Image (cartoon, rainbow, N blue to C red; front, top):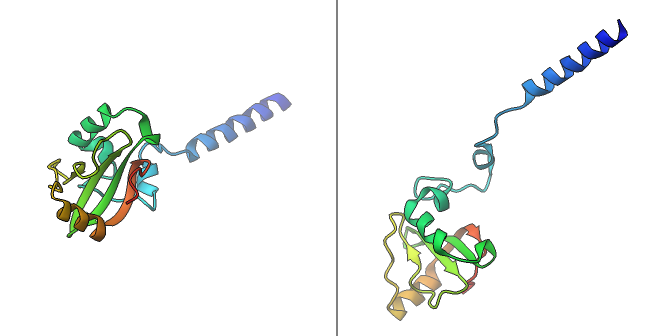
Length: 129
């Protein structure tokens, strides 16, 4: 009789624990107080096809690469930073994947001076200018 009671108690506890668990597949981003909606998504690195495609060709992972979100002239700027890139002024994009034209040194210097960093979206901020 005692083993039935113990077994019933253990089953009840296990059942209670299982009922209290939630399916947390989407909650980390939903509950992240630092989550930022970028181009209509909380996960632009994976959800924006053009950005996802660019990230797939970068070697070295998150220690050698980064995606940083800036605001400049009321625009969101997604900047792909990589440690092996030969230039820092040709990796800034709009939400649709079109590049900002910072090939003119004056335009790029204005961008550097007047941008505001919003958040590191992936990896490491490589270019701290």
